[in-house]
Image (cartoon, rainbow, N blue to C red):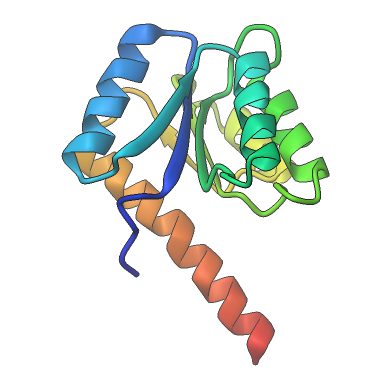
Length: 142
């Protein structure tokens, strides 16, 4: 499935260097509509603004350990919101601990990526998220 370059992506990480590097990776592979937040509360504000203006975020790439509102809390808010509950959520974590990843998947994350990651790995993980969503849609139709 070809991903559209105009997809609205929200990148959430409290480390500005990681946000800058990830934004550069996303731009390098063709995504041009990337918003950023440094904490969970700011991310939620951007999400709410998108809902209000009918410019909904279409993919969230978020760190798990965020200030103000953790990645888990952010994900739970997203999954509890009827207009955002199906938005793909890619967990970015520096913790390769299995329990963190299991908790994230159980909370509704679509996939995870362990930091540091390459542009190719990021692109592959995003593609996997959307491929799984398409497969789930196909199964529901049959």
